[in-house]
Length: 276
Ligand SMILES: [Zn+2]
Image (tube, rainbow, N blue to C red):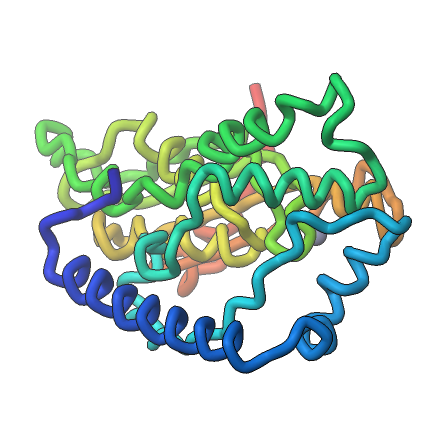
């Protein structure tokens, strides 16, 4: 189910996750035996607040899980976030969390229209955040060497994507444009779209996503240059906060020839903008 089950880093991460889990369980049982309800409520004001909200009973009050320090992964591994390392809740826990959020929003999770919503949301998350289970590196590992003689620009533009901002879990969506100068063969064009998809289907910032796309192409294809441009509309800006619709945010990453030569950047931007 998870990427790279055979790698050594996986074994290390599982070991790390088990250690973290042990520590969490020890600490949790300590809290449960040593703390009274009132002290517990004092320690987790959010849960107490949620319980008192509109006088609703809070059956799904969050269990206070102590923060566990997990050593940061090496930066090279960060492109493949590992749900194992952070511990993944069960489907039932996820659905209970959705019921809590429905009540937090002010609705009744037991009314007919919402009865199956927690199950549907949990299932939809599998797709919307499916990028956590995909390995962008692996997507680029097969190159077409028969076009080895080709070394001019390869540009794939207008790749649509849908992502979620990591600050509010609200969608942002738009287009990605990717160009590179191949050195030893090119990848299938659809692979670049799938790379975008892999990173988009995670909680993101637009800046991080742009850099991740450039990073993975750089490390696997080792091209002479890479340019990535992402333009997106953030619903968290349109729907809340400043409430400005139709604002687009543009982020770019230039590497290699695109970084050192401004003419290359102009060429990239011209190709992106000159639509037939
Ligand atoms: Zn946001």
